[in-house]
Length: 119
Image 1: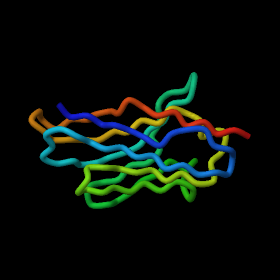
Image 2: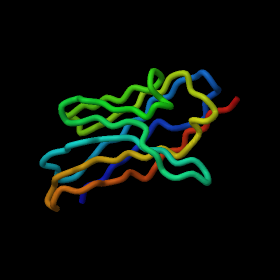
Image 3: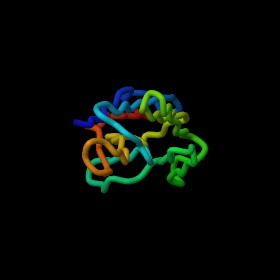
Image 4: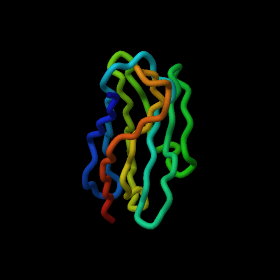
C-alpha cells in the first residue's frame, strides 16, 4: 500500500518561511512527477509546483520567486520551501505523486497539511 505523508505545516507571520516535506512509502518501483497543490476555503484545489523525476520544475505564477520545489529520489521525498509568505498563501497543502508500485502507475495524494499565514 503506497502512502504519502506530509509534514512541516503550521502558523507563521507574513514574510516568514516554512518548509513542507512529503515522503512516499510502500512498495515503489518508480515515481514520475511529484507536486504540491493547495486548497483554501471556498476555493478549488490549485497547483502550486511540480517537479519531474529529472528535476524539471514548474510553478504557479503566484508563487514564482518565493517557493522552491525539490526532491530526493533516494528518499522518495519531495520538499516545498516557502519564503516571503503572504496571508493569501493560507491553505491546506497537499502532496501528489505519480507512482508505479504493485498497482499500475497512478496518482496518489497525501492527507494535507495546514499552512496559516497571519498578517
